[in-house]
Image (cartoon, rainbow, N blue to C red):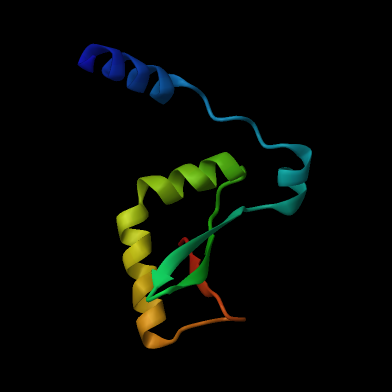
Length: 91
């Protein structure tokens, strides 16, 4: 079972990310929306990336989730909201 998982993981890592679509090229750098828990409610968040595709932006979010979540929670604690959302920008 473990060998199958390792094999599948290696295969997934070797896949190439898709090329940007015409719409993504026109839109420019992509944003990814996500939510964090805020008591019994959910807080909307946006991460502005420099990546040309949604797939790359989403992969970045998932890969760096602990850091991004910490930053979003810090923004929530300090009340740093723009239009009701926490906005993070990749530098």
